[in-house]
Length: 148
Image 1 (cartoon, rainbow, N blue to C red):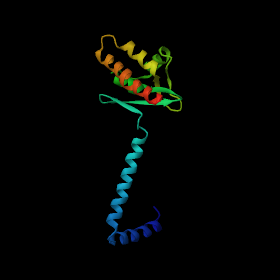
Image 2: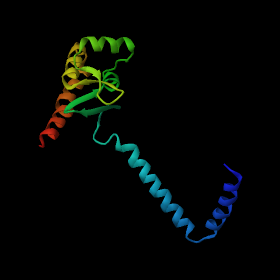
Image 3: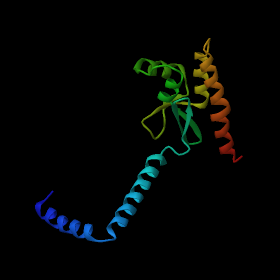
Image 4: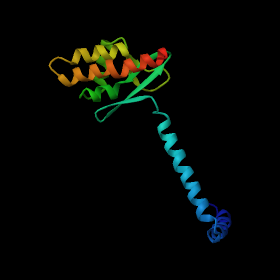
């Protein structure tokens, strides 16, 4: 910081601290700043994620399509995402791709169900996850799109 700027700030702060309205002003400004930060931090997520256990699952709607972020789905399924798995997913599922307008890879609604069907053999948690997607996530999103 420039020395002349510091020389201006110090007297202004001193005079402000001596005022009886300073406390109220500081509290009001800090409260407004906190409220703005909370709103801004959550704004991107509002209506765009669901929670499966402790895993947040981001849902992105683009051009009328519903996309589920791959890392969230794979973590919820108890798997680890790496380059090899991503390559296999691109080859195996037509509905797995880079989500338009983002830097995230994801599954379309159909690809989510296909992926979970392929992993559900003998795993009751995957079956529960698939049912949750069908009944909670996709059903809710369809109703929202249809206006019901």
